[in-house]
Structures are given as C-alpha cells and as structure tokens.
Image (cartoon, rainbow, N blue to C red):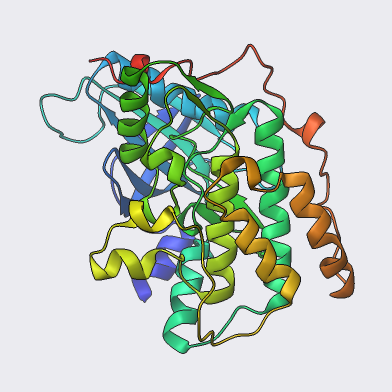
Length: 343
C-alpha cells in the first residue's frame, strides 16, 4: 500500500525510461500483456502525469507498419468515446526481447484508473448484481456515438468487446485497441481472400464477440460494418447479464462458431428484468444475417425513448460523427489483409 501511494506521488524511480515526441517517460509497472504487445503504467517525468505505454513488438516491417497505423487511427479519430493517442515512436526495444524482434512501436495513451468495462462486469457477476438500467443505456449510447465516428471515417473496429472499453472518472465509455481496425467495407472475390480474412479474424477478433460472417467468410461476398453491430449486440447483452452470450458456450468447450449461426439468444431464466425494447434490440443486433441487423442510426432511434424516460441525454456531448472523425477516406487505411500478413 505504501509503495502504491509513493508511486502515485512519483517518489519511486521504477523501471527504465524512454522518449516519445520529445517527452521522457519512466515505466512504473507492467499492467497487462497480450499476444502482440505489453502494456505498462508510466509517468511523464516533466509533468508527473500517469499514462499508459502500449509496447508492440514487431517481427517484420509489415508488423511495424500495422502498429504505426494503429497509432494513426488513435490520433486522427477525434471523439470523446474513442481513445486518443498522446504520441508514438518506432525504435529498438527498451528492454531485452527475443532476437526475432526487429523493432518496437510504443503508443503513449491516456491512463484511466477505473479500468475496463469487463473488469466492472466481472465484479457484478461475482456479486450477482447489475450495473443498472441507466448505466446500461448511457454506456451503449456512448459506444454507439464512438462507433458512428469510426464508421463515418469508413473504418470498422472488428474487435469490439467489454475488455476494449475503458471507463473514465465520469463512467463515460471509451473504445480502445485499434489494432484490429480495417476498412468498413471489404469485398471478398476469391477463396484465397476468404481464407485470409478468416485467418485475420481468428487472430484479431475475440471469439465470443465475433460475428458469424467472420467465422465463415462469404465468397464471393462482403464483410461490412454490420460485424461491429453484432459485437455491439454482444456488449449490450453483457451489460445486461454480465457476460457475452457466447461465454457459456466457450466455457463448456462447445463450438462458438456453430452457436453464432443461430444468433444471439436471451437467457431462459434471467436474473435481471429489462424493457422489452432493449431485449428485442439485443436479438436484432444478434441476427446471424448481417443485412437484417439494424444500423447504428436505427439502434439510436430505439434507445432514444428509453434514454429520455431515464432522464438521460440522447446524444453524447460533442457528438457529431461527421466532424469528430477527422480521418479522410484517403488517409490511414488497412488496404488488405494480404499486406498485413506478409513477413
């Protein structure tokens, strides 16, 4: 406990330092790791401000380019419900790593002490409690706003889940982790492309939030932003029932891919009761046919009277997707999975 408060005050000189955009940062402690990166709590030495460094280890030039694109997405998608990037750098790893690592891309991101939505829902599940209807409505409304900004820039997130939603001090949801972002519309014209995108989804899209068309990529066909709508439906379900609709399937060892073919189903014996409009919205967002899922505009139309009834705003502050998403159609873009997977 003493060490924690000394760290908060900047009294402990912890790990190594690094420089990004002329600012010096010192690593305080590691707070997370993934298959492609590690996340460290850091302190900017001049301001003493806490922040987060996402350190992406790159094994090829294509890896480096993908990581830099992730930083650009964060920097250029300006919206209160999308995580911004304070700076990034490309260089040699700042700690010892495997010899196959050719570069390290560091993204400096804001620190949000409340953590992720997933962590909060885990506590609710243990306590057999709910975050409450008002929080559910305000959270899903905020995520709709952030996602609308992304989609208006012709981009799709592709890995929307409760673990990729941060909470600020006012409990505003902030969508993070743009490492899976692709073009909003992806045309599949060959079996080779379909297999490539299926491999991409297996690597970058979390299984229990992944749309059925990403398990079995259509050929010929199209992958659209409706895959994000499916994931958003899984998030809405998790907000209501503290877990993804497909978490139990995964826990049993059954096929999640097969289960998604039947769409999202509501619990047969739910612990919590919600308005029928919200339940029907979950079912429509979890339709296995992408063309039959609602658009973000249609989702917000359903949410509006529920928000008004709860005394909540129907739009996020500064919510103008067209103006907030400053990425132009010709700017940062994942043009093909083939490019991203080259060695």
